[in-house]
Length: 256
Image 1: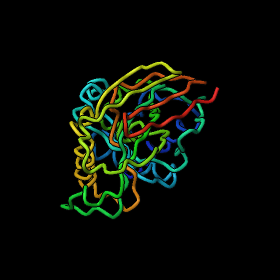
Image 2: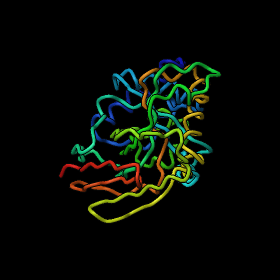
Image 3: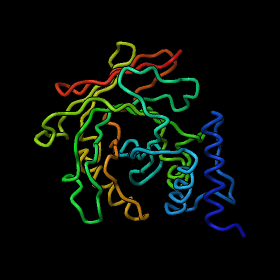
Image 4: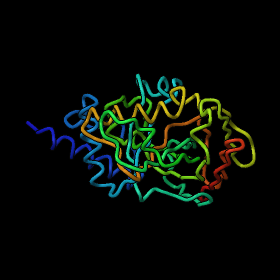
């Protein structure tokens, strides 16, 4: 009988091969498919060995509509890998796009480690505007289920960290308006309230969820808290601008 570590390693190897090749997986084979959240996180930990250095976390499905779309009861965490990090204004690769969506998000940067029971907000160094270009290694990610999505790094892929927001502690982030523009056309609007009611709430949720699996936030970690709008559809050659009202904006483009 295959051991749990071997199952996790095999699942991670298959997912990383799909990540590198651009080929999608219908589902992990039954013999190595994670059966619950803990096994999903074990596979995710093994995936991190393939992905290399990570600089933080993403949170998927922080909006109720997103949870319904992928058939989960709550948010999901996934690592952000250095190799897929980008700067505002960058042209991102597009040949491997599968989900083909872009998201306007609020992201926190941690100034210090967070221990269980700590008030995570006191550990925050800054709030940034951000754009995530998520993706999945599953052909039908919306049918994969929580355990497999956790194994798949919660659909982590490319990420752009934008400017810091001065005075963010005094802001009502739930009411902060956001908008997505693609090729100069407005495609979606939203607010921070779409992120578990407030991006701060999402950050607190992540601390609790990671602790369930013996994980914790560390100094320097970036945590992007989830889409504030309905994700915008993108394709090769597109230009993207995420606007956050008076707080600023983040732009990027997709290679042709």
